[in-house]
Amino acid sequence: MEKDLSLTKALRREFPALAYHTYFNYGGQGPLPRVAREAILAAFGRLDELGPFSNAVNPWVADQTRLTRQVMAQELGVDWQTITLTENVTAGCNTVLWGLPWQAGDHLLMSDSEHPGVIATVLELQRRYGISISRFPASQEDGWQTLGHYLQPNTRLVVLSHVLWNTGQVIPLPALPPLGKTLILVDGAQSVGDLPLQLTELNADFYAFTGHKWWCGPAGVGGLYVHPQALEQLQPTFIGWRSVTMDGAGEPTGWQPDGRRFEVATSSIPLYAGLRAAITLHQGVGGSRYRQIRHLSQYLWEGLQSLPNYRCLLSRPPESGLICFRYHPNPSPQIHQHLVEFLEREKILIRQLASPSCVRACVHYFTLPEEIDLLLDRLRAFPPV
Ligand SMILES: Cc1ncc(COP(=O)(O)O)c(C=O)c1O
Image: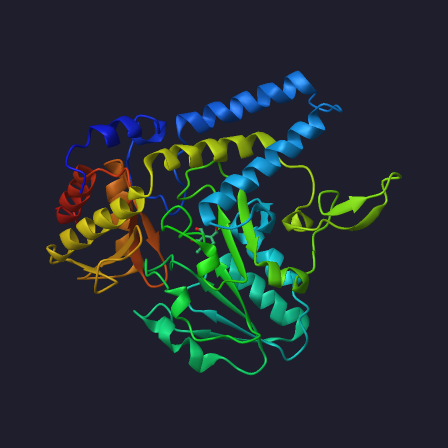
């Protein structure tokens, strides 16, 4: 672990939210760095100078979207043409889930640790198209190894999170059994900005993510990676002027050749500048940030081992920044709610999860060991007498 914390402390001053709290909710939303806030304001200023609606605005907007896709692509080790700009992870998952040519009787396999918005979409697909669904038990430690037993000859899609939001376990995607013609949609909500990623090495057909969690961008900008070989299997569902090419009369002539075909229409372009500024800030720190996340999550995991009233969900330190644990004497949702409220009164922010009933603390690379020490100390003091 970094011994001299002066660089980290200087960096933390760039995140105004960190002055108010001891923050452990990076998996919910990352704090916006000052540079991102300033970039958003500057971009709104530029819009005012150029229009905001004018001929001069259009090339500026096109530049902003292209640059944003390029920065995302660079972070994920893919070509920028494979990236679609979305609003959030759920929108990216919906693009894939509704875009496949479902037939009655098709099978969709997902883990038992997917996010409610994704589950709800899958259930609606089942209702409308008569597909069958099964879930495999990823929430049990190493339960991902059972995935192969649940595949069927008619499994069209596997839906799986790269980092499980409710346990912190990292799914080793390259170690999954060969899927043949079955496609895989990966929910990257908790992995992008938390793990070093080269998407081309992960065997994912679709990878949905957001900028507002571990990348600490503004809420409202996310992305979807579509493997070039999967592009033609996916039909656009929400369609608008950004999705299509047009002739001189403004008539649509076909889909955009790349990820833009899944983009729809008007967005808040200044937010794109904010996300780019946040990503650039992280890039300045370099790849050591991922090692630091793991050091810190190990530090918290080990600290929790020494508290007799708490049990971590994973039997070994998580390889991600998410640490899920329960109050062992009574792991009920009510006690966990009291625990979260008790900590929040002391300006320590963690969250509760319903299933499995637990609480989750996330560490980022700029979390301080002393913040973890404080959390452990206050956990020791719960319940207050
Ligand atoms: C695994 C997972 N998927 C999806 C989401 C929803 O994210 P968004 O609001 O960006 O769609 C979350 C957010 O908490 C998540 O943890």
